[in-house]
Image (cartoon, rainbow, N blue to C red):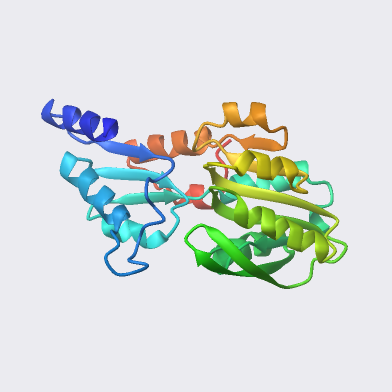
Length: 251
């Protein structure tokens, strides 16, 4: 609501262009009707931003890239992937002997892309849900025996999925388990679940501020993505190409 009011304030003060930088797009998971009579909240948010007067949206790791199609204005969907690759190479000594794991089928594309660029194997975990945010059972597809497993996903909310997945990976013979997530929402029992789970580290970006969570949980580490957003803002403002950021971390 504050964002919409500020966009409108700029618009009626005759701003020539208003760009909204939204690191974590709200309601991004509600991008389709999962059952009849459900809202499509992501489309509603898109409409509200457009009506308020935004001319350009810069966001990061949308839950589903189709959300860009909910807008008639340009949307730059930046990726945390280059920053994640950099973190893996700098902080996991044995990264050449690791497996990148997706905790659900939806994140398979993201995981295969990271695995290709590191030249390592990937694995998938297939999950079945009984209720909206509770996982019923999981099946691991791929080999993690005697390797470091790195779980990669775009967001962690109550962390039920990744904690289940971590247990599954350890029982399948993984030596260490890391989790790397773009948006750390960490609602409800998330922090206690992470503290009790067998992670070496849970790495999130600061698209959502994490200072309080880091105090409660020593396993949480943060990748700073302010540079990526700053460079994207600079490039769009000067009319330069943003595509360099899809594969490189700005220095």
